[in-house]
Structure formats: structure tokens, C-alpha cells
Length: 128
Image 1 (tube, helix red, strand yellow):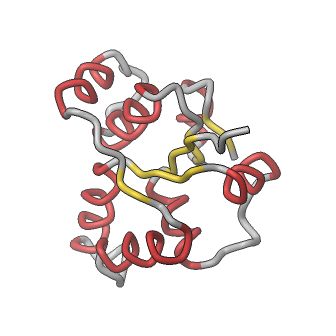
Image 2 (tube, rainbow, N blue to C red):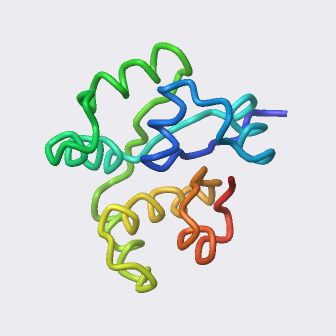
């Protein structure tokens, strides 16, 4: 069976990079060990934003580079117009990062590993 494409939200990417084994739920832990892991390019932008406002001490590309080297996490490339079109209908959140990250996973009909309860309530493929 071919490994399943699975996306990480921003916080999941940080937790994975930090090696936080204590935070994962059973479903997310299983996917982390078996799936082909991807992030939306928007995760890179949000990581940069979090660094700029002082919530992350490490640069976005350091985190994503480490994830690529250690866990084979790659940035998924969908046309921006397709992602934005999918995000337009996600009126349950006003967070543009969340909209675009969920839209990227939704375009691929893929799970999204997220601890965000609002995303879990509204995106049926959200797992933790």
C-alpha cells in the first residue's frame, strides 16, 4: 500500500522539528510514522511571521530545512489560484493562514495534522 499524503499545520511542523514526542495523539503519531508528509507554502510564511513577532526564536527555513532532512517533509506546490479558490469557502475562520493551510490539504483530500480545535471541528480530515 502506498503511503498516504498528509499535511502538517504550522504548530505540528514546529512540534515535529522540536522532537516533541509527548504531544501527539494516536492518529497523528501513526501518520507521522507512515505518511508522506507535506506542508503548505503558507506554513513557511506563518513560521516567518511568528519569528518576526518574537514567538519563534528560529527562522522558518531552519525549521523547514531540518524537517526536510530529518523527516523528508517537503513543501507542497499547488497553484495559488486553486488554493485561494478553495480557501474562499472556509468562512468558519478569519485566520488567513488557517484558511490557506486547510485549503491546501483539502485540495488533495488529505489529512491535516493539527491540534487546532477549530480546524478539527470544521475540516473532517483533521487529525491529532
